Image (tube, rainbow, N blue to C red; front, side, top):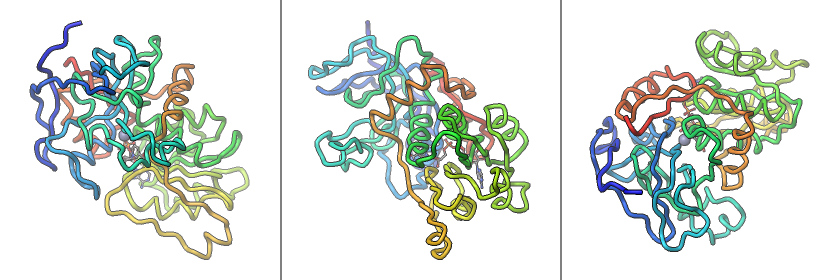
Length: 350
Ligand code: NAD
Ligand code: ZN
C-alpha cells in the first residue's frame, strides 16, 4: 500500500477562527503508534469547543481537530504487535496514556496525567492520515460500517459509560438532557438497549420527532415547558422522577435543574461541558433526598470495546448526515446555532 507524503486536512491556525482546508504532510508513526487512513470522522461539540478555545485547557496550535475517526491501519511502529496493517480501527478522544500510573492500572485511563487527547493536545481525525497510540485505538470488526460507527467513538462510548456510572437498572427511568444532539441520540439508543425508559429533554419540534422516533417515551421541550422540573417528574409513573439524569446540554441551566427532578436516591451524571458553568444544588434537599451528583468523562478501553460491541450487534441506530471534510466549517456553524439533529460525519475523501 503506498502512503502519500501529503494529505488534505482541516487545520485550526488560530483559536476562535474557522479551520483552513489545506494540504499538510503525512506523519510517521512512532515505535508504539499506528498510522490510520481515516475514512470518516464524526463531528463532536468538543471539536467546536477546541476551535473556539472556550474551555480552561489550551489546545495545541496549529490544530487538526477530530476524535471520532474510523479508518484502516496503513503503517505501524516496530513495537506494535496486536494491530495489523489492514485492521479497521477508531481514533478516539484518549489517543494515548502512560499505562503504568495508578489510574491506568485500574482502567481509569482518561484520568492519566500523561493522557494525550486526539484533536486537542495531538492532531486528530480531520485529516486523511492520523497517528494514534496502538494500545488505545478502538478495534472495529470488519463487517461494521466505518461511517456509521464513527460517532460511537466518542458519543457512543461517552454516553454508554455515563449510563453505567448512573447505576440505573433495566426497567428504570433515565432523563436525557440534550437528547436531540449527537451524544443525546446515542444515549437514547444505549439506554433503550440497556432496558431503560427514556425521558428526552431538548428544544423544538424537529428534536421532539427525532427523539420519539428513536424510542424516547416522553419529550419535554425546554423552550416551551412552563416548568421543566414538574414535567420531568410527571413523566414517571409515580411522579417521583427518574432514577438517573444524563446531562449532555451545552448550557448551564439544566445543570442547576437536574437535582430538583431526579428521584430520591437517584443519580445525576454530568457529561456536557458548557464553558464557565457551575453546578448548584440545595444542600438541604440533596441531603434529605439522598441525591448523587457526579461527573463522567469518556470511557476506558473496556468501555470502548463494549460500546462497539453493542453497535456491532445492531442495537444502536442513530441518524447521521455525511458531508465532505472540506465542509467542516458549515457543520460548526450549524452546531453553534443548536441546529444539528443527531450527528454530522465527514468523509475525508471529499
Ligand atoms: P450537540 O450540540 O450535538 O448537542 C447538544 C444538545 O443540547 C442540542 O441538541 C441542544 O439543543 C441541547 N440543549 C441546549 N440547551 C438545552 C437545555 N437547556 N435543555 C435541554 N437541551 C438543551 O453536542 P454533543 O456533541 O452532543 O456534545 C454535548 C456536550 O458534551 C459538549 O459540551 C461536549 O463537549 C460534551 N462532551 C463531553 C464528553 C465527556 O467525556 N464528558 C465527551 C464528549 C462530549
Ligand atoms: Zn467528543
